[in-house]
Image (cartoon, one colour):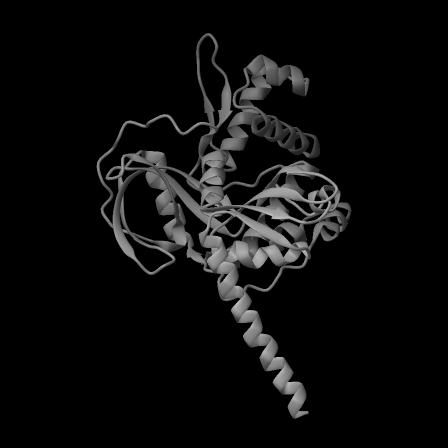
Length: 326
């Protein structure tokens, strides 16, 4: 009996490893006859595992999808991957799924060998408390949107931008992409006739979904790279050129490709092209160099720097008055 049970577990493990096996392949791996393979397959079916069989030349056995979720056999790395993934979801930005994720992680941890529990504990990290800007999204909204992508059905929704403006969108949805704590939908905007990315927490989908569509080819690099370019464009909507009066070697070590590039320089000064969401933020960033600087372009940045200088004068006066009253 123990030998048969062990063989069934090995057979189940093999079926989970590969999409399809022939009877002779399984018999050879388990060192049994093909007749015993057939009997063991029937026993797995009796236990609730939906094992499908194709007859004829090239036929074989495969583990299909059933009405219920049967137990899975996972190796050490797969167990850790699932556990870390569940822990991430439990502390993530999807409302309504955290409790289920935490429960599944508890069940998984209970049956883990001690060696894996120790490795999982070593991988545990503290979560930064969510601030007011963190917006969770309902789990059913995320899955419904992902389903429309899979079915190639048009999607209508109201979209709320950060500045408070609202619009009705009609798109062909393609991919759901996660970036940090945010979830985005990549789709073809029918009105604008171009690709767009949408934050899912700002979407209010409408039902029913629209008609089916023939999928287009995704932008170069796929949905993930398109989102990276799209988000990057937002943070590079303002550009300026400045000359910083400090050695190139000092400034170059401070500059990140995410927000600036060094165009030229020497031991006395260097010229930079700086990017940000606005000229106001660029004006505030320039203080970080702790050196004199000149505005090369645009002229509008000079006005932003003048306004910032006035703000600092008012702040300085406030501090001086506080000292005089002491």
